[in-house]
Image (cartoon, rainbow, N blue to C red; front, side, top):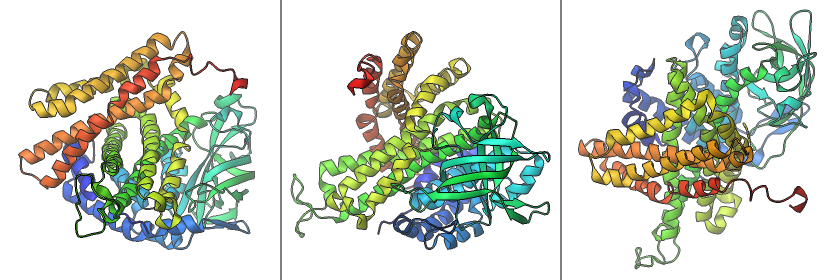
Length: 593
């Protein structure tokens, strides 16, 4: 059975040596001393390794079952959920007034990576609840917050988001679900939603559905969509549960992966709903949840890559196959371990350099979210808005690829369910699709985010990279050559791609959109290049000060050098593709495909 070990040392390194969180000006960060974050991460690590990870295979094999309108989760899930609730983990970064611990989002992100790596399907129950609670916190009335948040923060009640319908996915303007106003101020919600993660289950007293629907007589298209709170059980004035609402589960989707999560078809038959936010402004309220979810899904790409890598490394060190081409390294055994072979090393280094770079990237993104939400930093808010489609799209595309590489190291055993590697690959695959398919993320990046506020956020990113290079150049020739020069070249490629879009995208928008996925990946590589340069600088400083484990820092530098010479040059390839324009992409008539 696969195992999982929480990367506490690496998380601590990124938080304190690279991001220096306790020194930041963001409110609440002064409390993030290394001993405090270590205690939190070590406790979360024990929970995820000892309780959640062993249930990952159970959830995959058993799945969820629907009987008489009730969804039963896999064996052990309910007890584990109670364990997680008892520790206060669902409310780690939620407000104290609603029962949370008010820790910064960056700590919730670090802990969330562990939860997702240990058991992604299980973690989605609390993850979606967190997102729904965040939407209510941002857009709800005080009465709505007081009614729902205390129970949602504790996960006594869970939450969902209901967007997709059978005939429309990304194009929500085609939505048919309707809301009919009632005299008491409520609405009657009728329609069907599909692909609803955690839509029905047996682990919570109540489920609070956030449902997009169109108010009768409202504007056509996306401008007429509103968001509603639709509880599974009605909530009385004293907070107790009342009658069952008119929402039922029609079926459980049979999926490629995340079998332990109940992905449901939900039927709303005149269910009572309550407007969340303003009429016809549902997408604005829902995006509070969706943007948080997109960062969380990017984290899932990293998490599945990391747990797959951990197991692949163990296998490569233990499995004896062939001899090293330079001479036997295990002369007393019948063969050498797989890890002696250069191609195995290449695959493992691809994985290691991605997971460690991605971890730094997503934690940096979380500090930007904290700076925006806790500190009111508009520049941080604009920058993380720009980076969100990169975090979601790039990290999940690459994360899936890394699980495939980990599976490949097992050879034939990687294809056999007994070894568990298939599950990581299957579970990672959904992350490229839900919360906005990655092609849509790329279109959002190129079509909306680059030009937002006159392009000042992407210019701020370029200035940030230039500033880092300028501030650290000339002090260490080796650091300049290994990290700063590759980062400078990759950043110039990214700027050249942006310039191509400006010069060619206006007269023919296809020229920009045909290169959108390449641009998203190019942007992701530059972000990881920046993270590796920052981590390398931190490790060099630690070694010079004789601080920490020298092997850890030497390994960090070697892994960073690998990324800079083997992965970051991909920006040149992406630039060539982008610069070729749309002609070859759009050349065929539809009939000729």
